[in-house]
Length: 329
Image (cartoon, rainbow, N blue to C red; front, side, top):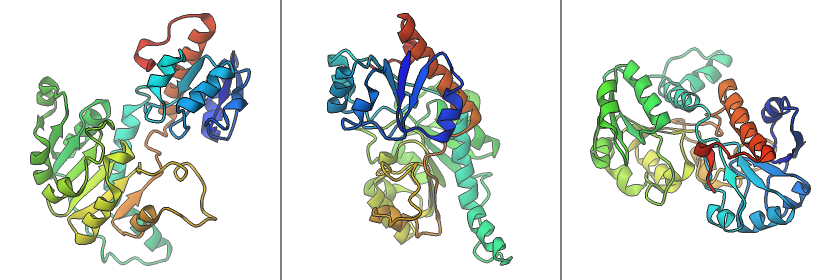
């Protein structure tokens, strides 16, 4: 069984190379139509969120003899699933590698941002022990809005309830039984926007949720609201976000995703000029904290990504069905 592994990172290689029943071809380049010939002779390709698996790429992979596209992530916006089905090229993913990892990172971003930990760290290293400008707020008694009550959103809600926060949730398919058991209340989106001190985004990216956070919804929010996004970058209109920060309508922002993160996140650009003007502007705000899509990056999550991906690769080799919950096309 031969697998071409694109966009390889050291932490990927350490986990996957232990699976010696598979002949791995670790490649640092991202997958695209131009790089697809590197998969020649491979039974499958293993790809990540920033690989561009469009119709041209899929056709290239098919010509090279590839029989499976295995995503080692949950998101699949970068794959043309309709075309994959048309040409008979199966696509699988890892739907839930560690919802705890992402939910915990969400809370870590908020706590660091609210209590100015990142600023205090730099200040103290310069022997500045002043507390001026370091005032935060208690989460106890505050209202937290969870936008998207799936696996990650539910865990985040439970953590926030542990702070004794009031939690309101919005979801396309509200589970009232779960909410009642956790002390959470479902409410309409506009009602949550008007009441929440903190908004935590966990909804999938769909045509309906694209730019869910924009000028209209920001205008409905409580002044000084904190927004945390560890879900999908395109849930937020960056220009509207910047306008909200400049006017003070938004009090703080924690992002682990960004709508134009391709080509930036996961890369070392420390010796280059950042060409994205909007991202550069966000980085100038003292009340904005950005991490580069690392919410998933725990030992447990990486182990689960490896386990599920390898199981599907083994199924291909042995002619067995793929794990049903992982199949996209």
